[in-house]
Length: 526
Image (cartoon, rainbow, N blue to C red; front, side, top):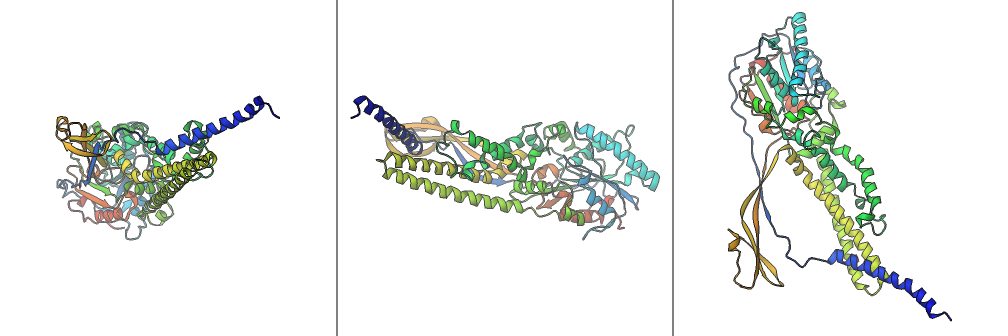
C-alpha cells in the first residue's frame, strides 16, 4: 500500500496541471469577453461627405497665335520623366518621324533618338545637361538639313516638362544661351509642384516604405493562409517568432506585383525641389513662357492608386503591344478587378472565422465543467478570432489603400473643424448613455442632478478630393499662365500618358494645326 507521501507526490502534478488549464481557460475567456466597466469610447469625430473639387484651367494665351514655323522638316525632341530613360519615348518618336501608326500618320520630322538626362543632382543641373544635348543636336540639324533651331519642337513628360520651362527661363539670357527649340508640349508635368515624389521618396517622407511595410505586415500574416497549421499559444506575441519569420520571408514577394513605388522610382535627390513650396515650382507656376506651350493633364478614374500601380508595373517603356502601336496603353482595370476579388475574399473569410469563434465560444460555455474540453474550444475560438482579425485587417487595407495613397500625392485633403462639444450624461450603472452636442462644456448638464456628465471636443472631418492622374494634380499640370491650350486627357493616369489613345488624338490634332492658337505646332504629313 503506497505511503501518504507517495500519494501526495502523485497528486501534486495533477493539481498543477489542472491549475494551469484553469488559468489558460480563464485568460482565454477574459480575452474574448472581458470588457472595461468605464465609459465606452466617445465619438470624437464625425465624418462628413466627401466633396469633389473640380479643376477649371485658366484662359488660353493668344500671344503666339500667329507664330508658325518655316515649314518643311523639323526635329521633335523628347524628354522623359522622373525615373525614366530615353527609351520611354522611342516608339512614339520613330513612328512620328516615319511609318506612322493606326490612325496616326507620320510627319515631316527628322528622327532624333530620345536621350536620357542627368537625374542624380538638382533641377538646374539636369537642365544644363539637357541643354548641352539639345545644342549639339540642333546645331547638327542646322548644318546638315538647314533647319532653323527656332523651328524645332519639344515634347516632355512629367519632370521633363519642368526642365523644359527651366530652360525657357534660362534662354532669356541671350548672351549665354541660344534657344534650340521654338515650342513645347508638356504632358503631365507638375508645373505647380507635386507632393507625390517628396512624400513617397526616401529623400522625403519615405512614404513608399511605410506604405509597403504596412501592406507586408497585414497581407503576409500567416493567419490568413495557415491558421489551421499554427500551434496553440501562437496568439501570445512574445511566443511568436515563427509568425514574425513568416511575415519577413513572404513580404518581399508581396511588394512587387502592385506596389512598384518602393522600387526606387522616386528616389532621386531632385525630388526635394518638386514640392509646391519649392522655389522652382513657385516661380514657374506664375511665369508666362516665352514660347508657345501646350499643356496636357490627365484625370484618372477611381481608384487611382490601383490603376496607376498597374500601369507602372506593366511597363516603363515599350512592350510587345506598343512595339506594334505606340498608343495602345489604355487598359488599367486588371488590378482594380483583382482588388475587388480580394476584398470579397477577405470579407467572407472574416465572416466564416467569426462564426467559428462564436461556435467554439458556445461549445466552451456548455462544457465548462470539463477543463480539457473547455481548453480545446478556447484554443479553437482564439485561433478563429486571430484569423478573423487578420482577414478583417486585410480587407480594410485593400479598401483604404487608395485613400491613403491619395493623401500622399495631395489628391485628398482631410481637415478638422471644431464644432462644439460632445456631452454624455448617465446615472451610475444606468446605461444606455445619451449623446448630445453642446456649445460649451458648461452646457453639458442633465435634468437629473445626480447624473454624471462628461464632455469632449466635437470635431467635423471634411474630406476634399482633387482630380489627378495618379501622381500629379490636374491643377498643377494644367494651370500654366499664357499656355496656348490646357487639354484634359480623360481616363488616363500618369504612366499611360505617353502611350494612350487620348494622347494620340491630341498629337494628331496638334500636328494638323487644329488647336486654336497653336499654328506653330502644325507639321506636314510625310
